[in-house]
Image (cartoon, rainbow, N blue to C red; front, side, top):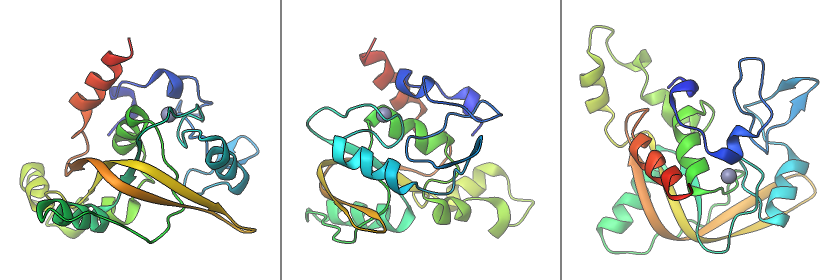
Length: 193
Ligand SMILES: [Zn+2]
């Protein structure tokens, strides 16, 4: 989705931009004046983890739940656990840090590097060119990922990487289309104004 069409949280608005005007997440490394969107910077990530800063906007996250964007397989696992009334507990650590609800809703719609192995599945690359976007969307229903709220997170800073582990799902917002969370984001931003 074109980032200009998605309302920006205030704290994201204040991030440095790349040449296109695209806001650069807090954990993104820079090479000169070029943000390296596909990468996660060790020092920036460690700083966010230690100070409880949002990995998107670099602003303190209040006590309470935190959010992240998960890819298709994890979204499916969470959905199945919730449907079965089981607690979801993912013990596999991830390099992706948490953020504010608004920031993660925003990032889920505009950040092409979030959950990218799954996002790719939703493109036309693996579907016939003559399918309408409506049919293509239907075919990938729920497979692109989700914005998920967790009661808390843990982190570990080792010599080479910063890893996060998330506990207790408190909100599950799966998405199958690029603009799935637009209304949710608008409502979230309206709360803060
Ligand atoms: Zn944020």
